[in-house]
Length: 283
Image (cartoon, rainbow, N blue to C red; front, side):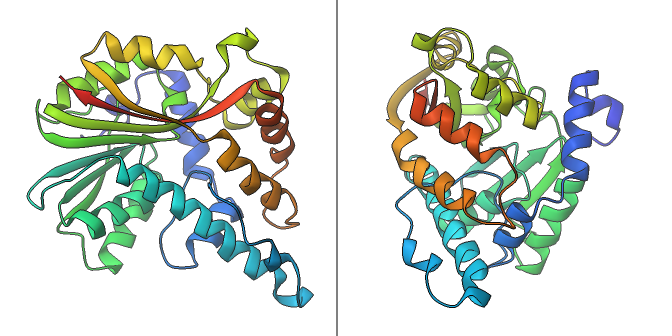
């Protein structure tokens, strides 16, 4: 796949691609510069709050390193749920961002990892990181649409989405993932979703949608769409409480906070928004 018109199927997809092609958010770039693993997701776990103490001139760097640790912990939990992946296996990072989780997966499993994104700038950046690490022969990133990847059926032992499902129709996504996975292959997603019990998306969830030009799905939609496409959930973990401290720490940074932190905290603590990990097997 090479031409933009072949990959981007709608004006909405083009607007999402434009957003991520132009994105230069310090909270992504400064955190990734800590160790060259650039994430595009949020963190979990209890922070070391002592980083906010001590000399003022080094406080921001300590905060950056701590938030990066929490984001890496989130990616590590996702990879844990892929189960054992053989060294001759193959993984797909659907909506790969700047490639951090793909690089972590290759380091852990030693297998081939393909990352895909509709952002040509993210693909360029991620391939550059793989080359710098000397793993370009086993970790590659390409400009592809996760709803129509062009890969052969049954190619992958595992597939994941890390905070990228809110940009696509879940039925279309899980149909493609089901086609791509080997029978018995594993799918894992970590995602924010709105609480069905709350009703429609809350004001805070709507603000998050507007900020990221996405469409957050209700929690129930994931399980309905998986059931229709031969993906059987085996593990569901509510990470809501585990991610709240990350947002509280990020909100206290004068250089990393983007203004959306208040909406996330309001949505999580008010119960209208959940942060879930779902692992499912292809049957």
